[in-house]
Structures are given as C-alpha cells and as structure tokens.
Length: 86
Image 1 (cartoon, helix red, strand yellow):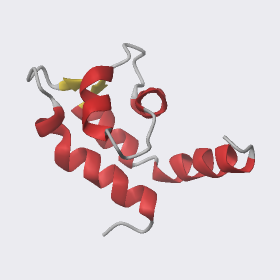
Image 2 (tube, helix red, strand yellow; image 1 turned 120 degrees about the horizontal axis):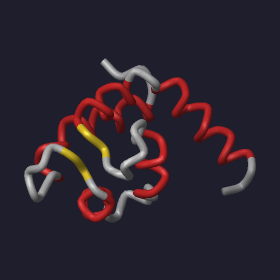
Image 3 (tube, helix red, strand yellow; image 1 turned 45 degrees about the horizontal axis):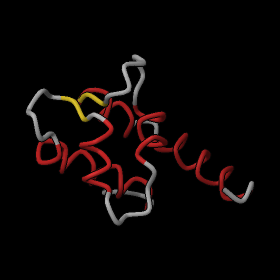
C-alpha cells in the first residue's frame, strides 16, 4: 500500500511498464516514457534522471523496481524542486 502520492505514482510506473515498452526490449526509452506520461505534467527527462542508474538514458524494469525502494529520495527531490520554484 503506497504511503504517499509519490509512492502511488511509482507503483503506477511499475504497473504500466510492459504496456509502455512499445518495442518490447525490456526498457523504457525517452520516447516511450514521454508517450506514457503524456498529459501527466511529469518531465520524462527528470524521471529518467531519477531511475536510470547505469547511465544509458533508459529505464529497465530492474531500475524501476529499485527506484521504488528510493521513494523517500524522490519525495526529497520533489520538495526541493518545489521550494526552488521549478
């Protein structure tokens, strides 16, 4: 059960991962992520910056799962960005 809105959204990414992976390669590239996030107000580049731990500018399912475990860090980044007015 998600403890915050951020955790809920992170679970949503995990649930939609296969649906958004248009080419079926097991990773979300920027275009696939942008299409999935369309209308959400989320910047796909920021999402990639958070989840992509190996630096290939793609999000693997493993990275998405590991990212969920870092929900507290995501909350801190969001709060810092809001405080800075971005």
